[in-house]
Image (cartoon, rainbow, N blue to C red):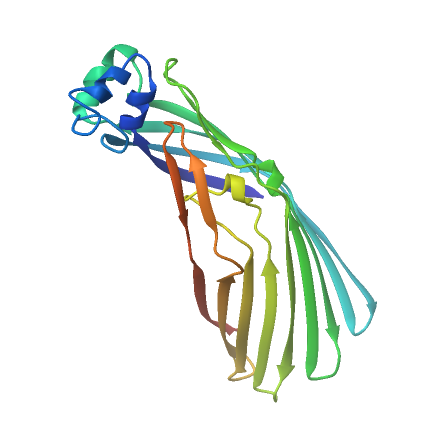
Length: 275
């Protein structure tokens, strides 16, 4: 298995808070006073965008077992893949802040490197052909998101401190049950429900990924228009189990709090022709 990563991470920088928390520049936040002065929390925002790419190798393996004619059980494993994303960091800094920071040599465009390990996935599934028309399925999978403890961006610029985002993700589980029923030779209907546990815990939830446990509800239909040609249609609704909240302290000592809401509607249509 060859896995290609092409990643762009962007983040706002609150230079106002950073200047006020630095003893060498804190006096600027009180000139002429903390209210009307040009510097202070959320008064001088900038941005950094880091882009990196990498290609790495992994593997996929699996096995299938049919204990009786009507039951099949399968297991699949997808390995971890280690990436070293090599690229560039582009800083956008307000001109007056850039003048203040010029002597430090920080916050200038430079090369960057970030290490990333995508998770291993174990999947166990089973199908029971209950009758000629009805089949029931179940699946569970475990994703090793504990491989992603942090995103650390190391800059080529020696005076630019590493940018570290603490993920501390945990391994997560996915459970699903469903079935399909053949109405006749031409039409098959399907339905299923699933729970997808989030690897993100409250202390480490970020606005980049304000994730929460999810429920999946899906329906589908296959139309065998002829012996060789068929059309499949599906719909899935993804609903967050709860309302995720964020309460984090940034590296510039500014705090971000809030709540998020989300969901998704997924539609799919495909056609297949057998020669």
